[in-house]
Length: 268
Image (cartoon, rainbow, N blue to C red; front, side):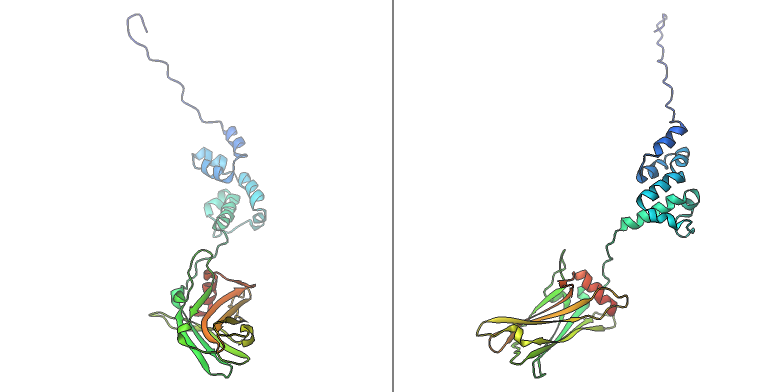
């Protein structure tokens, strides 16, 4: 305070100065890709420091070494601006984006509600003992996490009798149905079920016979899928109680989505 009573303002502090250019370059060598990208957006000088191609070349060699062999890339492969100013940054962004998407397959374009199963069962003598058509979504399967492409249809009220004989036959056809779409179909299996697998059945005793058959490969190839049919019977007359249908890969049931992705090759 001055002698005349007037107050004096405290001296203003000097404005903070940005770090010198050399410091930015030193720090840049220790940053990861996310930090480099964020820092390059601060200002023009920071962009120049943190977008230097040798920084992104180091990250490419560390995370995606095989990507280096792709240089030079055309303008259509990566962002043209990145390619000219820092080709390795554009290359890193391309591979990082691919890795971020992961390896998950897209949702099937076909839904259970779009598919109907037509099933024909024949006795040993060739006569038709049971035929039915059921929407896949009503065939005893729930599309839940971990759900498998296996269906069970209760036919105990049909009074269908398999009868004696060495084998029964099953034909399972998957049909695309729905309003406004042209129907399409694929025979999932047409096979014989050995009757002996059900065993000797007395009154009230249940047994089952089953068969598997290789499915036709889709046009793009893929694993060897098998269709499975299981027929549950009971009593001496072999009354048909339930029919189970499924798709297997290496002795395990595929998921609902895997089964639908297979069917859409033929039904869409």
